[in-house]
Structure formats: structure tokens, C-alpha cells
Image 1: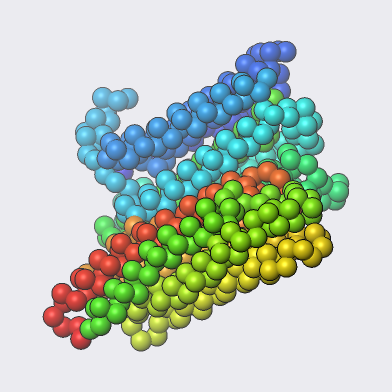
Image 2: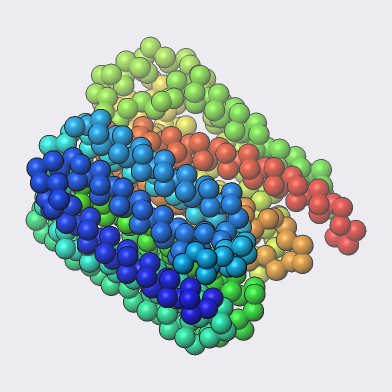
Length: 91
Length: 194
Length: 233
């Protein structure tokens, strides 16, 4: 809407690219070494933090009616939790 | 930062029309099921899934992620430009988004082609079944989204940017952001998971 | 206007949804579907041991499938109010919906044929059973077109007071999207994309019948609103 929010969008985009790079590194043994199960959980959490930023800043749910925002946040939390649970139960 | 934004945050605004959120939530529910089913079956046969995953081309996947993240950014910039009544600039952003989407499809065609040439198809094993099904259903969404983006480009270029038209632009933009979000998750599930 | 006839046609959705479900579920025992992974002998045994229930279930499914035709007509009449004279989407809805009814009828015929002479060779019973299920669940394209044209018509409504709420248009587009995986059953005998799987059977089945209920409620509302408008005849 003003210069402020345009630059915020750009910062969010930049952060999303960085987060993609970080999860790529986690996927290649960075940080967790042989404990790749933890790396996977970290990747999933980063993924859904990225998703949440797209929800809030690109989709503009930060200023949307609360019920809609909560529906999407609940989606992110539930899907992330379910995926981590199912992944972990398969180790 | 939040103190600067407070006046805006206080203003409640629903982007796009209500109905489009029915579609988006319904579609995301369907994809949530697809994600859960994939990871459930993966947990039943980790060896097969992890082994097959090694044959995927991660570079293609990562490049496509960058493309879609950037496309979402362009759409958001386009909406901001439209709100300032800068129709021509807004249209240019939507055109840039369309190019990202087109590049995504081209990369996907090369990626699928690489698999087919290696003799891998949807029936090869369970991993490839999910890989082709989920990325294929997502690809259908990208192609539908390219139609939506063309419509946004046309609207921003030729229509008067009143409240009603901006609402239409926001509806289409929200759909495109959903396409981006679904890919963010698919990228992690198919290319990065270990 | 013909309020009563329209309402009767709209009400047809309810006996269709109820009796079709009774026919396929408790009677024929096709819920969950017979797995495509079963051998010819296993399929033949099911048909031999449940001959009468399958015949009766198929008869009920056949009897109620015709109700879909009346329901298609009332959707078309209300869509025509949106589109006016050059009602191409209305016609596309009728033609695609009608072909969808044919898919239901042919599936029922194939199951009936399999149960008609259960003593014949298991391979033939399996073949007829396959044809029935594939007709029933692979024929997604006409349903996708039907839902999409209904959706586009509703979203394109230029009336001062729209016939249907706009969310119903988006709902129809979503229903169409959920049917797309159905075609993939050709590749699989097990898993979520086989014909007894989550994305070919359970999701489309539930969405399909909930579509009938949602459309019935909204059509009924539109017909009553139409009858209260003084200018329409």
C-alpha cells in the first residue's frame, strides 16, 4: 500500500529464498551430520514457516478477518504436525 | 517494525471475494490429504522411497521453488501497484509472474522427460506413483493459474482500477499464492526429506 | 412460472442420493468397492455368494439413476436465467451431465450382467466386474466439465440479484478438481489411486453426493426466490 509495505514484501521474498537455501543445506547433511531424522524435522518446520509467511504477507491474511486467518494458521499447524508425526512413526 | 505497521494492521480487509476462499480452503484440504497419504506410505517402506528419491533431480526442484517464490512476490507487487492505480506497472508484474509460471512448466517437462528417458514411469514403484500424481495434479493447478494470470494481466492493463476490479485481481492473486504454497510443501516432501 | 414442476425435479436429488447409496452399500455390498487386486476366482465367489443382493442392489441403482436426468433439467432452467438466450453453458451442462448418467447406467448393466449368470467362468465375471467399476469411476471428464460449466455460469452472473451465491460457483469448480484423479485408476490395482482408494473412491464419492445435497438446497432457494419475483412469468 505504501513504500513501507512494498519493501516488507521484498524482505519476505528474500527471507523465503534464504530459508529455501537453508533447508537445502539441511537436506544435504549440513548442521545435523548423521542425525538426518532431525534434519528432516527441521526441513518440515522451515517449510511450514515459509508457508506461514506466504499466508500472512503475500496472501495478506495478516490483515484479513480473524476467522480466515485462523483457518489457514490451523491448516499449517495441523498439516505440519501430522507430517512430522507420520514421518517419525516410520523411523 | 510492528509499531510502524499498527495503523494498517488495525484495518481489517478480506483480499478478494469470499467465494474464492471456499475454493482455496477446499483445495488445500485435498492436498493436505495427498501429503499425509504420501508420507504415511513412505513411512511404511522408507528404503524404497528414500532410494527412489535419490534419482530425482534436486536442482530442477530447487530452481522451480525459486521460480514460484519469485512469482508469488511479483503477484504481491502487482497487487500493490494496482492499489496505487498503476495499471501498466501492475500488468508488467503479472506478465513477469506468467513468465515464471511458464518457466516452471518448461522445467517440469524436462524433468519428466529425463525420467521417461531413464525408463521411469508412474507404474515403476509407489514412490514414482506419488511423485507423478502429486506433481502432476499440482502442474494442472499451475496451468490453470497461467490462465488466471493472463486474466489478471488483461484486467490490470485495460480495465479501470476501481475497488471492484482490484477485488477481482486479489481473488486471482490469492489462487496463485496457493499454487506457490502447495509447491513449497511438495518440494520439501519429494526432494529434501531424508 | 412452473414452481411446482421445478421443485419436484429439484427434489429428485434426494431419492437419488438416498436410494443409490442403499443400492450400492447395504444391498450390493460394494462399499468399500471390490478391490481391483482380487483374483478372478475371488470376484466370482463374491458374485456367486451374493447373487440376489447384487442383482437387487443394481436394480435399485438403475431405478434411481433416472432421477439425475430430472435434476439436470432443473439446474439447466436456473442456469438459463443467468445466461439468457445464448445459453451455451446450460447446454454443455445438460450434455455432460447426461453422459454422466449413461456412465452410471452402463456400470449398473455390467454388474447386473456379471450377476446374471454367476455360474459362468470366473474370468468373464471378473471382466464384467472390471468394466462396471471402470465405467463408474474412470468417467471423470464429463463430471469435471459439468461442474466447471455450472461454476463458470454462476461466477458470470450479471443479474442485479444473482440467482446463486458466488461461493457456489467456486464450490462447483472445487468439486470438479476433486474428480480429476479418477482417471488414474487405469494404472493401479492397490493404493490410494486404485479404484477402491482414497482419491478415486472415497473423496469423489463423498464429494459427489454432498454436491447433490448442496445443489438441491441452493436450487430450492433459487426456485422459491424466482416464484416471489412478480415480473417473471
